[in-house]
Image 1 (cartoon, helix red, strand yellow):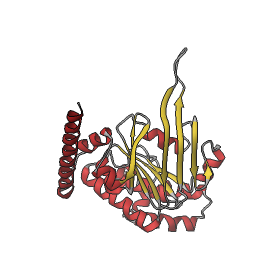
Image 2 (spheres, helix red, strand yellow; image 1 turned 180 degrees about the horizontal axis):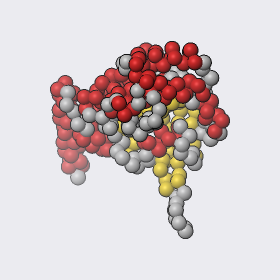
Image 3 (tube, one colour; image 1 turned 90 degrees about the horizontal axis):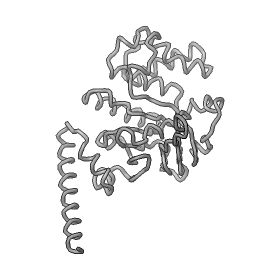
Image 4 (cartoon, helix red, strand yellow; image 1 turned 180 degrees about the vertical axis):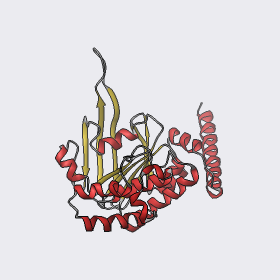
Amino acid sequence: MTNTPLLAVDGLDVDYPGKGFRAKSFHALDDVSIEVGAGETLGLVGESGSGKTTLGRAILGLAPVSRGTITFDGKDISHAKRSERRTLSSDLQVVFQDPYTSLNPAMTIGNILAEPLAIAGSGLKASRARIAELLDHVNLPRDSVDRLPREFSGGQRQRIAIARALALSPKLIVCDEPVSALDLSTQARILDLFLSIQRDTGVSYLFISHDLDVVRHISHRVAVMFHGEIVEQGDTAQVTGDPEHPYTQRLLMASPVTDPDRQELRRNDRLRLLERQRNEDEQAGAIA
């Protein structure tokens, strides 16, 4: 990662007002700090309700920033106005979890992909060429332009959503659980697609997931979120291979694995953690 990160979140708090008379506000994020470099993937992992999606929404301007700063490409976007967000959309995009609801069912694939291009002022000829390029990029046939989302499988729909996010050549894509609604074999193909796109374009990802094994497959670095706080972060090999925080260890043991090579990695991880726990218990007993 370069000295100046593409995305820097520093001391971020997000509070939601309570409902009803004298209701207390809900503290969703507490002093969160992360960085994502150009061409890098930061995996943000945690269980449901840990705050990881709230962090993604805050970066996208969809959740209120109570304290702290969000800096993107050298600019403070913590409280960016709607007009500023529209300008940001060419550089900052999102792929949502559910490919069944993130695409307009009444629009053809061609119109779905043309929409961001038209908003950016692209002409018809240029848009057609770019749409063909996008379909090639996500390995879908060019005649998909005349079809509706319901004619595609879940994995294919997510490829369409990825193509839409890529339309304006963004610098960063927030990927909010983009494979969790897919079966395991489709997940693997979509993860490989994300990696291929990054190699070809240099785009950065903030990759949000509840599955530490998915994050290990795609990320350069990992940040672990628990109850609205970052409890551990570092290089992927260090965090997933030798986790320090008990919550990270629990996530590592819980994530499913089907690939034989990764099953062997998981078995070694378990043995390493058990050995560490045994040594810690022995040390605690000796002190007592």
